[in-house]
Image (cartoon, rainbow, N blue to C red; front, top):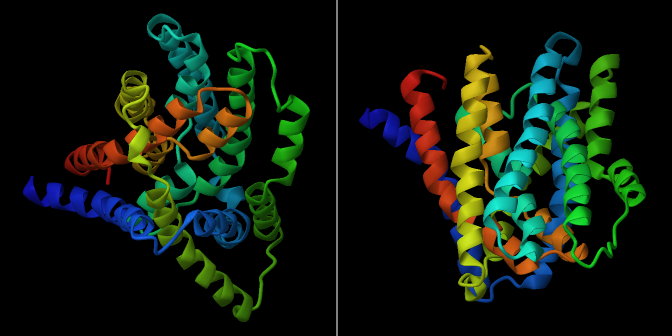
Length: 315
């Protein structure tokens, strides 16, 4: 039991510690907002696409394609949104907060924290993670547009469905994954000098992403909208993960699938939820608080889930 607990702590805590380093570097003015903006650009547009392409191109999709698993992730994501929407309608009195509450409660930071945790546990991001990313990212964006447009009390949205479709097509992560799939299916290989170069970018993604997340923390406004932010955090980190993991195990998915499903649904809220919420007239302060609180509390929740998974033999 103690061994399992130590294992769980050793998986989750390093993620939190690196984020803490980012926070203190920002407080000491070693890094600033311009650095965070530039780092996020490098991660999203350069390092992470290269890493995903490198991982996807080495994956045999013809052998490991799992329609049942993909369908489960899509249905689970849509169902979680509907459940959270009902909860928001019942318990959120300020209707201007509903959009930010739903968005922050369902959209997880799978790209940065989820993949990092997967690598910490298994040594790689796995076979199915890149394909899930290619499906979930567009689905997240579509659902976010529907939620934020419908709950916008002013009925004035700056982003349309056409904009969403175009942004999906231009998304560097989607492009990288699709290109990787082409390489995988055709058997094309890059020279060693290219793969070795790409491996450096793969090593850059995780620490830089976690540092920027920590540097983005702002505790000055944490008291605002605290109650709905805490409710959303509990839903995001505990309520929904327990439900989806239960159904995943009941449907006899493999242990790796159970872990991947947990990481998809149980990681803290994605920072992009703040950007989209602010752009579409949602409550950006609530969105920021949900991101910060879920990120901090995820150290506890992820440790608990990993400990349980280790104890029952899933990992």
